[in-house]
Each structure stands twice: as C-alpha cells, then as structure tokens.
Length: 611
Ligand SMILES: Nc1ncnc2c1ncn2[C@@H]1O[C@H](COP(=O)(O)OP(=O)(O)O)[C@@H](O)[C@H]1O
Ligand SMILES: [Mg+2]
Image (cartoon, rainbow, N blue to C red):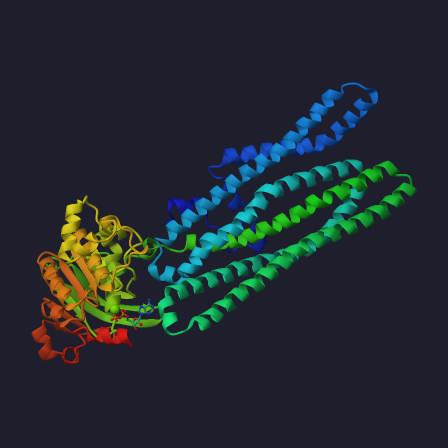
C-alpha cells in the first residue's frame, strides 16, 4: 500500500505474526525512533543534562563531607561552599532545563502525530470517516494526544533519570556485596511478576477509557448538530440521559485505570519489604559466620532504602508508557487505513481504455454498474450515458439510488461490478485530483465551508479570478444584492453569526460550480429549496451551461426535467426508462405516475420536509 511521506515518517509496518511481547517491544522502539527523528540534537542535550544532574546528585554527599572536614580543620571553607552552591545550581537549573527540553521533544512529536492524522483523515474515503465519526476523531486529536503527552512526559523525562539512579545504586550494591544484591533482586523480581500482570490490565483499561471518552464526544457532537430537532421533539432529557450513560462508562473505565495505576506503588513497596527482610536475615547470618562486617551491611541497607523511589518511578513510568503505546494504536488505526487512492484497484475489464466506438466518448457512462453499501445492494446493473453537452436528468422516487449514482461518478464510492467512465476513461484509472477537476458537484445540502464568501466561491477554481467576475457570477444566480449587504461583503465569514438560507446556500454552491468551469456538472436536487422565481433563473443558467457542458441533474421539478435532452428514470436501483419527456410519457408507467403524482414538481420534497 502506498504511504504518504508523513505517514511513512510515523510508522513502519510490523510483522503481525510475532508474539505480543516482541510486538510491544518493537512498537516501543518504533515509537522512540519516530520521536527522536529530526530531534537528535534535543535528545542529546537532554542526555547530557541528565548525566550532569545525576553526577551532581552523586557528588553532593561527598562535597558535604569535604565541607564538614574543612570546617573542622579551618581550611578551604569558601572553596567547598562555592562547590556546593555550584552543584545546587547544576541540579536545580539542570532539572528545569531537562523538563523544558523533554516538553519540546514531546510536543513536537504530538504535533507531527496530529498533522499526520489530519492529513490522513482528509484523504480517507468519506464513508470511512463517517463510520468513525467526527466526534471520535476530534477526541483522538485532543484527549488521546493529551494522554499520550502525559505518558511521554514520564517516559522521556522521569524514566531515564530513574533508570540511571537504579543502575547506579545497584552497581554500588554489587560492589558492596554481590550475595545481598542477589537477595534484593529476588524480592524485586517477585514484585515484577505481579506488576507485569497489572500492566496488561493497565493497557486494556487505558484504551477502553479513551474509547469511552471518544464515544461520549461522538454522541455529544451528534446531538449538538441535531439540536433544533432535539429541541422541537422536546427530547433534551432523552438525549441527556443517553449521553450521561456514555460519560458514566468513561468514569468507570477511568477509575479502573486509576486503581491499576495506584496498585503499582504498593506492589513495588512490597517487593522492597521482601528484599529488606531477606537482606537483614541473610546479612545477619553472614555477619555471624564472619563473611560480612556491620559497616558494609548498614551501607547496603541505606542503598536499598534509597533505591526504592527510583524503582517505583520506573514501575509507574513503564506503566504510563504502556498505556501510551495502547493509545498510540488508536492513531495507527487511522494512519494505516487505506486512502481513496489506495482503494482504487483498476478493474481487469478496464485495462484497455481504447474504445472501438468511433464517436466521441460520452462525458459520463455507466456500464452494467452494481453497488452495495456494506451488504445492502442499492444499484443493480445500471447502464446509461450522459453526452458531452446537454442536460441529463435523473428522476425517480426517493431512495431509488439517484444520489448514489452521482457519488459513483465522483468516485466517493467504487462500483462492486461494472464500470463508471468519465470522458471515456474508467474512474479508477483517473488520478483522483484530475478526475475531480473535471467535475463540479453540488450536493443535496449545498455545503459551504466555515470561511469567507470569496473563499467559498474560489474553492475548486484553479485560475485567478477578479472580484468583478465573482460579483458577475453572484448576480447570475441572483445573490449579488444579498452578498453586497453582508457586513464585510465578499470577506464575510459564513457560519459565524452569518447564516444563509437554504435557497441562498444552493445558489452560492451553484455560483461556485459555475466558476470552476468544469466540463461536467453534477447537481443533486439543486432546486429543492428554491422559490419559483429563482427556479426560473436556475433554468436559464442550466440551459446556458448545457450548451457546452455535460449537466447531470437529480431533479424534482417538472420545469427542469422537461428541458432535459435525456431523462433517466431510476427505480429501486435500476433504470426503468430512458428518453425525452414526451417519449417517456408514452412509454413509462412510472414516469407518468411521477408526473401525475407531481413527484417531479417539488411537492414530494416539501411534504417529506414537513413530515
Ligand atoms: N451512506 C449510506 N450507507 C448506507 N445506505 C445508504 C447510504 N446512503 C444511502 N443509502 C441507501 O441507499 C439507497 C439509495 O439512496 P440515495 O442514492 O440517496 O437515493 P435517492 O437519492 O434516490 O433518494 C437508500 O435506500 C438509502 O437508504
Ligand atoms: Mg438523493
């Protein structure tokens, strides 16, 4: 599968077959490689600072000893006071600098992760993004990265220092008495067994907690987007308790995670108690048989007491790191998902795009196309063509599959079988941006971005456009006055206090489609919210356009349909009639029903909306 540059920087593929422990390790090293990439200097700096601070820590007791000596003998007092002050500055300043460098490294990693995720989600198939949900994805970008940041703070910051301290102390203990060190390690090993078991639950509950948070965020985002409906149905209480159930689940998994994390510390302490008891018993025996002296035993015990804090920091730090790795998996899920580009495998039937037909290729052609959403068949064996110029109208009852046909042309979805071609080339053989450069698409909702009127108009337009031209196009769709009266005209940001009506949105989306000057225009019920005056205007625009471009329009209005050069009647995912208005009135029962039942005059939409 092709991977984008950002995606590649963030993950390399791992062999699924290896056992879990090795996989854990490899994801750990992979993570650290990703973190350090491009930040080598900062990591070196952190390492040097860490060593300096540890050295200062270790030197401190010796320096105090010298000062005490100097005080007793009356020599070099000032020197040792200065040394002590310098050590204190190195420790304090070093710790602060270390924390700052580590924060910088961690934040940069999070930044890369966030940007890679944004980059990837924008290139995933629409259906995949919808399935996960915007609330969930938003939660990954915020809550999950916050958790990960916490894990990195400990993993990159406190963990290395603690490991250094543990190793240093164990080295000193080894020097003092290897037998007692063996006893100590046995005690800690017993604790490590329990801790390893705790880690497994820790990873699981950390992941569950983030999933529950994301579900709550998703439910919340969904409820807010449906707020007017929720209110009009007086369903606030119902939605409220549904969301509360989700937040309650997040609380439970949060507590579950917290107690597992909290157990790490007492279990480590228990290991220390075991070691301590063992060391005292074995130490006493060895003093009795004369192989150890009291001074060595006391020093050893002091070290044992001292090592307990860094050992428990290591245990906690590894726990947080493991939780972080589990959460990291939620990003990999997105970063590894196939993009739209990855999905299009050229169909075997399409390897020879040369047509035997000498006529110019139609702008859009469906050839025995079938399609299903998941397992629900929606389109079955549909064939029709739309000419290079002229209006092709798709009509049929709602749910027939008209919008789905337009999605197949845009390659939002790929056909299960058969072939959709644009300008004679199967859609999966087009480079995606090239394919979409051929097409202007106005969807059913006439979606506008949360941006200025000007930027909304210029999206999808590759050439420079003057304001005068923008205004001319706005006038063409009857919007020049409306936009002129907005507080900042073309620079007004839509969606921030300035809302356009449904009809106005449709007109703006139409102006955008006009500006893009594409050879193909797909319109999905573009008149559903227009009044009859602008409907007239709309018809004139369509006729202008149709002189030189291919217009495929899902239409509900008889006025639009009558003027189409070709009408395709769709019912339950099949084509049941094809021809002009007059031909179809004669030939197609369904078309006659649609016309008689005024399904095409817009009444259907109005009644459905009122219901
Ligand atoms: N994203 C989707 N997932 C699953 N089913 C869908 C999806 N979109 C549409 N459908 C179903 O596919 C059928 C055709 O839908 P659509 O093409 O929107 O019909 P039309 O535009 O003719 O009203 C309907 O039964 C609809 O419920
Ligand atoms: Mg539709």
